[in-house]
Length: 146
Image (cartoon, rainbow, N blue to C red; front, side, top):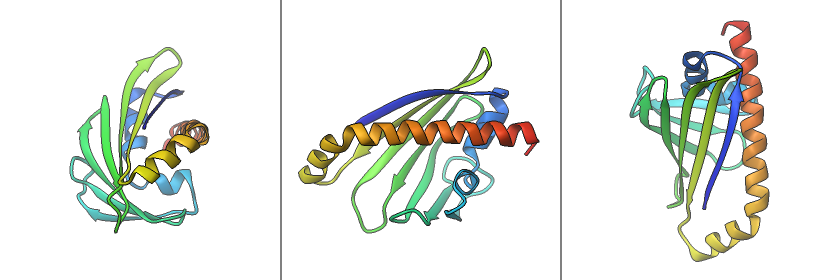
């Protein structure tokens, strides 16, 4: 299943890209999570982090890093063969930066695929809500100069 949603973030494309590319941004967006750098630094292709604190822990690896136009990453769950490929495209637009987000879910069993199909409306709403929240936090961070 592939989900896409686009948001506009008030701020210059370079600053918006940098906020989204920061592996510790997840902890800024959701204070309940803990982010651990596993590999990489400075941020770029190969940077890997572990995110804990909301449900099952997962790892994120940056697989494309083209500042300030594109980010791509793979989310994996230790001990599972499921993964999510995500991508974000950034472009200047009236009022800020347009961020086009895509998530492609790769599920290991037919049962999970059927379950995802049933839950698809909820997953899409949750995806949009999360992206809108991230955009709001990014705008506040950029306005504050961080």
